[in-house]
Amino acid sequence: MTQANTARRPDRVLSGMRPTGRMHLGNYHGALKNWVDLQTQYDCYFFVADWHALTTAYDETQTIEDFSREMVVDWLGAGLSPEHATIFVQSKVPEHAELHLFLSMITPLSWVERVPTYKEMIDSLESKDLATYGFLGYPVLQAADILMYRAERVPVGMDQAPHVEMSREIARRFNDIFGRGADFESQVMATLDSQGGEFKKAFLHCHRRYREGGDAEALRQGLAMLGGLESVAQEYVERLEGYLRGTGRVILPEPQTLVTETPRVVGLDGRKMSKSYGNTIQLRDSPEVIERKVARMQTDPARVRLKDPGDPAKCPVYAWHEIYLDEEQRQWAAEGCRTASIGCRDCKQPLIDALSAERTEFIERATPYAENPAEVERVLAAGSEKARVIAKETMHDVRSAIGLIHG
Ligand code: TRP
Ligand code: SF4
Image (cartoon, rainbow, N blue to C red):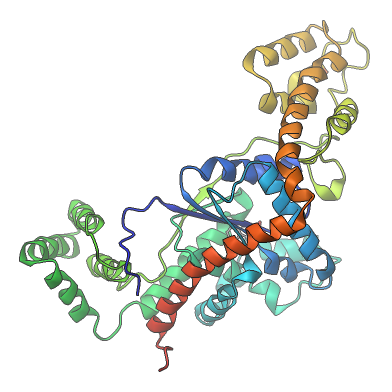
């Protein structure tokens, strides 16, 4: 049983990434930067989804550990800090597997079959064997990752939104099935009694107004009363909330999907930046490499000669300017381009400067970890242990709701 009253803790945030090795700027602007911003505002849990790598590549396991470590070095280089966020590895918290098992029992087959990425990935990754039980169950594993931490918010890219949505549906189903034990009502009344007659009367009044009259204000008031409860275990608060809402006890709360707004990140060749296209800028590329890579970056093809005017909207470099240059520099570039008063080489210089400065900062932060893998392992071990405390609590509640506590 949880003793602490967690009603007023900062919202918990959870997200994960598959171990893909060194990160590029597409990964950074698509997710990691957002994580770094979130870590000081919320109680953040970020993890390496190493089991997820197995769902699409069970025959490439030899890279998983190195890729995990390299990725985490980049997380730390980008500014994620174990002082703020809990950074851990999925496989070090084996409770994820147990929750996945339970959730798989109640997830209708039709739900996993209709996940949009399922058929798409089978079609697009022809070289891979995706006709496995594990790959079909991938979103259920993801639901276990998410629901385990009872996080309020899950920041993900657009492509992952359907998976978070499905974890909400699975949570709802779980709570419907297991959230209302035989003694549900008597437990609710006992908790209310422990809060005194006034509290009980006011709460039951809200309950009646909401359940009988659909009064949303009464629901709001009832929830506010629960938010103000002190020294009542979370389990009991959840039961009261379930009673108020009419759903039973909420064992696995539904998280909110936070779709990350991300800028368009194009690769050196103007296509989407992607490891498989070989068109990336890496988080820890040296300033010399940046100089070389930006020099060969595509520009507006209409600017063959210096005197040909160009159109920034058609230029991949300008897409980068949108991210890295300030308003004044951007105007200078756009004007100079349209009037052919600057060359592409000049135009690229402030971008080279900004990217190099950012790289230098990331490399500086990452180097102590890159040079000392044991230090990375230490961060991950400590984070995983911390994550496990929550995972164990959740699993205790889950097992007890299902009726699988022996002894
Ligand atoms: N499926 C995600 C991806 O491919 C990674 C992931 C696994 C994840 N579990 C998660 C993301 C839980 C958010 C929350 O990018
Ligand atoms: Fe692109 Fe700048 Fe060259 Fe114009 S001047 S095409 S914006 S690099």
